[in-house]
Length: 93
Image (cartoon, rainbow, N blue to C red; front, top):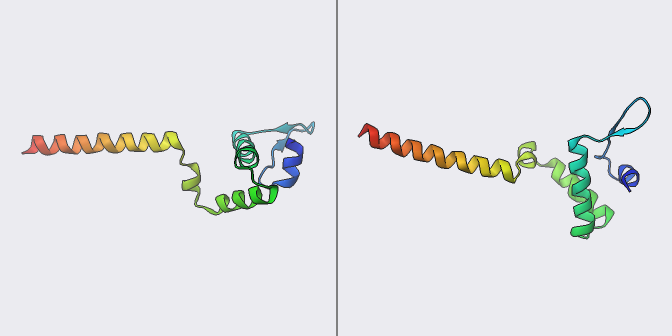
């Protein structure tokens, strides 16, 4: 299945070692999981999955990389910053 997806999805291009074995990086594995979700969970056709991946690739990189963990960390940091600013205001008055 992976070899077939490599032929269908241009974004999926794992590197190969000198012996010709494929070396999947984290990015490749995440893309495979994304393709699997599009095809099996969202029930898209191959063409539909290709279009969705191309649309996602056109988005700014910052939006693509921002995952749930990063969003949670960012929100926690905002709350800490707000609390520190409130404490600073109380101490300066």
